[in-house]
Image (cartoon, rainbow, N blue to C red; front, top):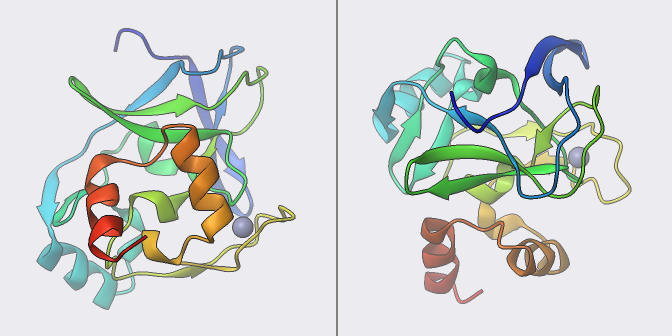
Length: 166
Ligand SMILES: [Zn+2]
């Protein structure tokens, strides 16, 4: 995969996480999210069976299911060092700013989610940790403003937030 970074999946927080093996610059692509496309019904079924955390929302009613690659293992943080960017040629994890080799990579799950049928309680330990993580409309105003200023909010999320008057 051209233009992405060397990463490693290893133990983190009692599960797995993705770590960069090389220093990254802000704006640099780290990995591509892939995986079989599925619709909301498939995600609802999986969530009902207790397996709702394996999906990345990529549009209002479209999701990537598990790919079997490192993109399955990127953890959430309420103070993330990376974000999900929707480029012409794919969906990528991108560094927010410089990241040192060896660091774990995170994005904020709330920024990609609309009516996502699965919530979890975050234990990231950041000062701004929100606790329960849900959907884009639950982002605190200050967090949303920061993410918008950095260009981290996907177009389909902006559309939803406009609809909700935010
Ligand atoms: Zn948190």
